[in-house]
Image (cartoon, rainbow, N blue to C red; front, top):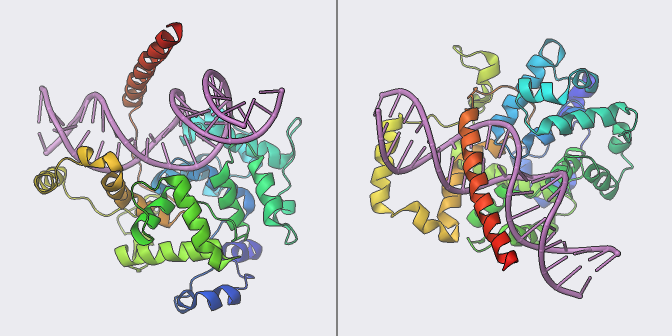
Length: 328
DNA sequence: TCCTCGGAATGTCCTACTAG
DNA sequence: CTAGTAGGACATTCCGAGGA
């Protein structure tokens, strides 16, 4: 238990060098970003963090704890393997991530026909960032973002995950504009944070964190459990309380009259991204915290089916067009 | 006021296509 | 032939528009 807590709090991390570079981080006591009690858990959470808002990530992990783990604890690889990917998909609502989580568990357990993933090897202090990164990248379901995220969780702060939040941050604070897409912003970020090597990730995360606190305050009460809520649904209810729907619509209409149609404006992406990220920022803020619950919000499969059906028809139409062109 | 619907977004995998 | 790139699919959430 002590080992797990020490890992979560990164007790042994020496921050002197980073704090010398960023004195404000020292003043704020920033640097020991939270992580899970074991690497396996961090990797699963990294998978559930992909393509998903924070609340969704939390909900998926909560279901894994509730439905697979013993007495609500995070499931072990063996406990995952006791289920099937289909079961995980259906009961934990992790979608296509089920296969990735299952295969990761197989690798950790060294199942027949699967290359064994030695977590101790990955965590060994002598491991370089390059070693860890290439190993992680070879795992099914781990692309650039996930591998970099896992690397920073391993303490390789010279490795940091660029994502849409980086784009939002650079547009807000570092002069990127709507014409700067992800690849350009990634280059800008790499250059910008190279001044903080080998603590690029901490410098980046510190900037983000300061921004979040400016916007949303620094009190810890947002994590507190309210008396009328079950613990599982309250801990990560980080959303800003919404106005009633009608009120929202009225204010939207009022805004509409002052700023013409957002869709029309969004041709250069600036506005649409801005509005989108208002809801994204609080989600991403907490990406590296441990799992707990979030309010459930059941999706409507029929709706998704309909959406996909429509998109598919559109694609088929496009496909037909392409085929017709080919034939021509 | 409630409900339904469509559109957009997220990171990774995979396949088809293109350039060298 | 190989390496690189583009784009679709995946599951889910959120938001706005519009109809009942």
